[in-house]
Length: 407
Image 1 (cartoon, rainbow, N blue to C red):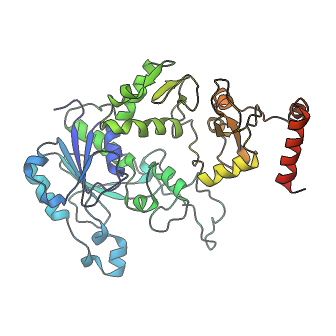
Image 2: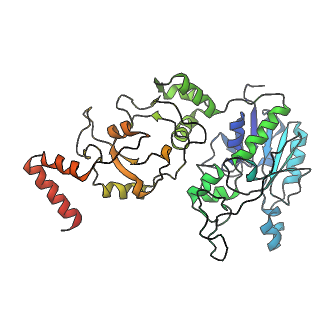
Image 3: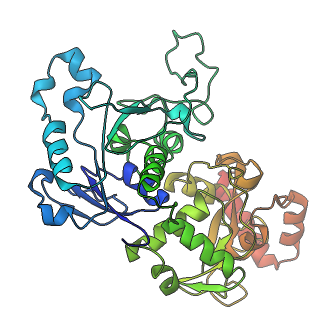
């Protein structure tokens, strides 16, 4: 058996279950009847029921999430469950014949045998109440369940309307939902999925737990995930330049290194510099410039959209709010200035991704201000800088202001 056992993810969808198994320490390979562009691991497009025994034998364990529509509450209410395939029984027969450890996951009401129930209240960080059943041929211990809290609501008839927040409280992510896509991703801890994919996904925390129980039944300790391996590598080389080739050797598949770097920077707040942050780094070079934040201390805020970026650039006149350079200037290395959108109050200090908390900085100033709360330049300082320029430049500034404010 490999150091990281191989797990086959059947009916893989967009990868919510797969992500949890990877974090538990499995190498994951997916199968689905349709292409899943966002699936974060290797996969093939094939009808699951046509897979051969020799193919199944290549894996150490198997997870299956057959389509749930036939067993759902909605189908029960509409009386149209017969219109959907009922695949649990044939899938169970196939998995039992394989002789492998297996898990079948589905919704409440599905005909699973002696299933355990997992709920979002059992896992720290989740903000969804999503009951899912897990049948397995090995024991699964369940974390303690907790009382179900009130969910964020948009229904003005409910007593708690206006008293909840989509970023702090539990939300509803199925169907139309009651929150933004960004908040749904945060609530489910699935940062890459589209809304229609989130509707059908399970939180990775569920299969991270199931995967740990599976490893225990196999007599194995938890193995490091791909992200764990990258973290260990950066910490061992803190302050040094790490190349793309080094990172590719750590992950499976090799193409997944870039996604993991983005997650460490955006979702966990690791101070990893790229060529956009430091002039001495080239393409495919990275550096951990400081200590990563403690787990749970980095506030995940919604990403800056292209529309919001355009608004902030326009509002700030395409000018760095710290040193005053514009897109027409050169940086200290003689390269064209790169303007970036910066949080005035850093996200690590509780700053949100709102227009009021965003400003334009050049890459040089943003590198120096990273994770700090620097004061923006005052009007007095800006006017002083303008007075130091030539009369011609002052007139250009005046004309720009007149055009900007139509005076």
